[in-house]
Image 1 (cartoon, rainbow, N blue to C red):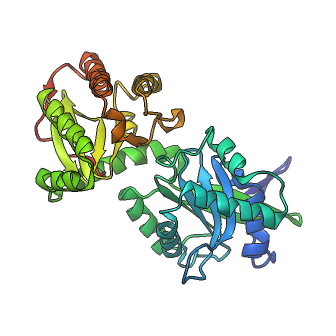
Image 2: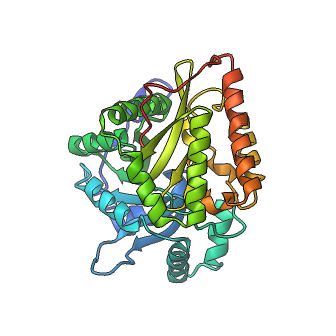
Length: 375
């Protein structure tokens, strides 16, 4: 696209320029500006650190390390070159390296960042304020790592790789910074190019369809393997609850199927698959708002909020309000109490009843031939 100056009698194309021509460097120019106005890239970002390098045996540095409001870690990789170089490969490496970051690690990194920049304030308080938390929630922090590639341009190799990764459920995005010169003034056109904001809803639907098609082709893990992990890794009481949930689910009936590090379930309502939660071999239960939000009736935000409140009525479950499109989790141990387990089942029975009563879904429960989602 071209930027035009609007005059009374005509449109005048702005002159293309480059960061190199304007002597804008990556670290001390562009990075410094974006660091202080990160909302230019995404209004949902909070800068934890810049030039982050907190690992052994590596001198690699993350340009900007951020958080989003869902407590996901966000790796921002910047380039001022005209093709992006190999930034997607660098960013993937960085994402893997910070994937185990805890709240305490993030707090320490932000404290160093504030100290280096001589910014007053308490690192923990600043992070908690951004997340809207009263105290750190270890089980919800850093559940996913997002990648934001920012460059003057992207080569075809990069865009092909990014689209392929997005199709496989990696949240990676490309933001183009196009420099222009108008009457000796320097302008920057900031535009997300992958995914296109106006096409993102459609692209997400296509992505979900691709995930299901791949899932239907893969060799499914056996439930025997899942139970072997549960019985080995979890306490006897936690394993008992997991077995109880499977027995209850199959009696409703729903189809229980194995996923990576656990099991989940689905029901089909008049041709529309619904997924509820995952019981993990790590001792946590993931509530799959992400999949519920894609289909009626729980595409309605208010219904998912009602579901969240009903689940939060159980002691030990605190699902945050800002994760209604994510996969928040809680400790399976919250269901060890018989009354808590009974309430958990009744909440999901309420959800199934709402699905069954929804006119757009029909009212027949079917549990055959549905591929599981990509976990």
